[in-house]
Image 1 (cartoon, rainbow over the protein chains, first blue to last red):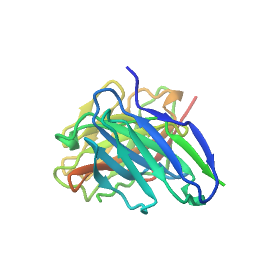
Image 2 (image 1 turned 180 degrees about the vertical axis):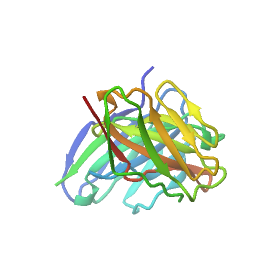
Image 3 (image 1 turned 90 degrees about the horizontal axis):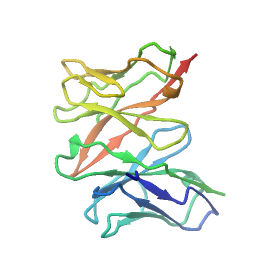
Image 4 (image 1 turned 30 degrees about the vertical axis):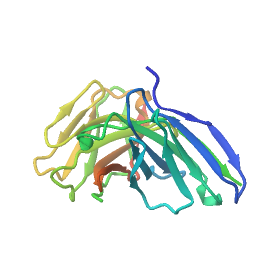
Length: 116
Length: 112
């Protein structure tokens, strides 16, 4: 079975530009979460989506947005890129929202974004 | 958010058991302890989780103290491929959603 897939693998953008990152969850998983991992730190929670609705948001500015599609894939959008947005962006999927605390999340390989 | 504390680094000899400690003294009664590891900037890999009982799977064992304020991840026979950053995480409910709150983790180095 395919795991969580993300595209692109690497991306280089210039300050002020916008970027769209994509994620496909494991088949049958309805929840997608996004994390940002700056070099040398642990991943930081950005968003969680379940059944195409935002269910949780971390401490990130409004420049960050996301959406989930009917097939449960997801996009993360970042506008007006800053140098500090350079990071590994990770997508994770979970099977269901029910009994959420008992289900593990499965992470994709990430998208490495470099802002110059 | 419940916070976890881990040593920044540990070393272990290949073939020996690696014991990784974690303190989570502010954990709530319905919060699970999760362990993930991350190898060289790949996506984090799920290892094991538990609530209050000890757990074991094909990768590791998780020992949770009776007061739930700390836990230990045990890799019974460490190999070189177990070299990674190991994260002890308390999974937090966030207004109907849930998130993983990662700390700095423990960088485990397995030596030949």
